[in-house]
Image (cartoon, rainbow, N blue to C red):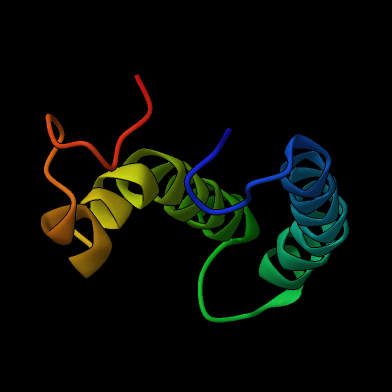
Length: 81
């Protein structure tokens, strides 16, 4: 059981929707980075990729700092065992 969704199917559907959204926006961002004229296209695509990887690395850490995590310490009874 996940903390956000009590039903496994609901959690799986959420992951599928996030994947569908990301798979549609990433090519749009890369093509927009290649078409812009402020910096060379190769550097712009590298910058977009760097921001994407930073989001993957920092996202879980930032979610861990959320108020819900502070209200529910790791060794308390509200975490599944």
